[in-house]
Length: 229
Image 1 (cartoon, helix red, strand yellow):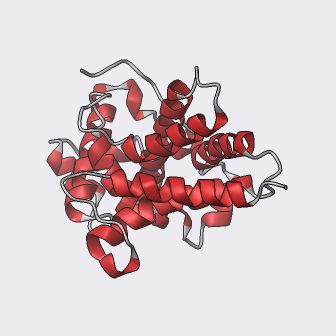
Image 2 (image 1 turned 180 degrees about the vertical axis):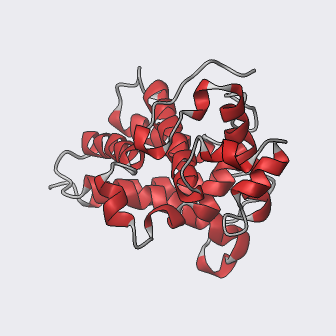
């Protein structure tokens, strides 16, 4: 069952917040489906407008270009994961268990059941796997960063880094480990699906248990080895 939730994002990402209107929510819903279907390179506002039986101009009233739309979608996803981690660890006092839950949440955030009625989290997760790198590995990254386009991703990394520091306060690289774990969670799904010789995990019928174990092994072995004698 869908729930009522509103994700707050950087206002510079959009001209009008699509969450505010029925058309805007349809733009989000169908842009996710269309990008997943044709890929970001072949996605256009004209194709999206045709899909939602609207006009290209109406889409441009919400987003200046498709790059900003993609950043918006990924920012929504990162804020969603951060919300889930905070909710799932709110009553956990054991730092190791809290980190373990956070890592599992990263993997499980794209559940099979819809949570927000205009966002299919499972499909959006596939976009994150396939397209996320295109939001910041660009010539515009420094300018985009100054505008705060990656605040959602940074905030999620800080959240995970705080879990890491709680396990081992003396570990000197919590932010580096946090961002590495997030990138691993995406990269190894992509590798398992398309470049299997680059990973040791397999994902069959949506079973991500090996990915969870990989993230746990990587994180806890590093944090245990780094503890002072």
